[in-house]
Length: 252
Image (tube, rainbow, N blue to C red; front, side, top):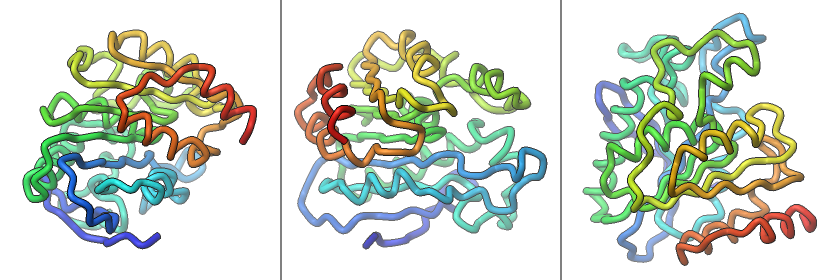
């Protein structure tokens, strides 16, 4: 996809990151956060490498003309055998304070080294939940976008009859984000993994959150179709109407 692959030290973990090659000056950095990937094989066996096989967030970043970075989680992207890593960090503790704090350290370094004043976080699936947990730790955050975001991990595990994610932080149980942070929470009407009602229930706890449904979209499907329009919306700090989402769904 034409990205520069790099590594960065967080809080006890080395993270893999991918940077786009946008050279234009900007005071704003876009940080993309991917999904949980494949923590388990067949729902029973812990995967050796949980890295997402379908890099939805990377595909979205490929459409972004702003300075952007995809930030990998601790132990992902082939780093599962590094000394600090344990399978707990990509299974039950995938949204733990250890994961969130380390990612926050890397993002802070990226902001400082690039001279960025404003941060936009884009999270797909589990990355959406992480974006909500990271935002309070990064005062530069101006906008948060989640796509099929796992914003209530307790509701999600109950829906699928999964074991509770003990050691993880539930974004839905945290205080609402600061009112100065614009929030856009996108859901697919055909999403069976994180259904729109689950996203909407979590967003209702956010006074400044916009909830947008794309009726024909699934969990990982079709987000590229609306992403350039969404980026324009972010640049203009707009309010995305349900009429716009309906129009996109009707004309894929």
